[in-house]
Image (cartoon, rainbow, N blue to C red; front, top):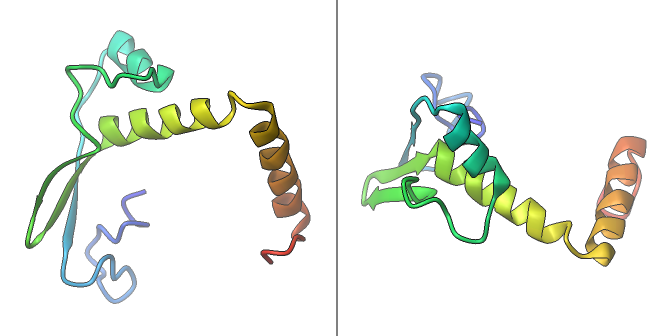
Length: 103
């Protein structure tokens, strides 16, 4: 993930967001707190940072735990409705086959 955001030393290979720094904040979590993150409940755990908790003119600080909570929340919401599940399965099949209108 860090490389996809352009966090690295080789700016020619990984340009990131032009004119902005992207830093990742992480910390070790006990199993109980990590499970709260991946449950993706409607309310973010009070002890967890927002996904982007600092921004200024030079860049952003992204919380890995906050981002993980948000992604898990998004996926649980997406897959809670049957029509979304069917569409996701179709897209996954097209990705595997290398077909589809988006190719």
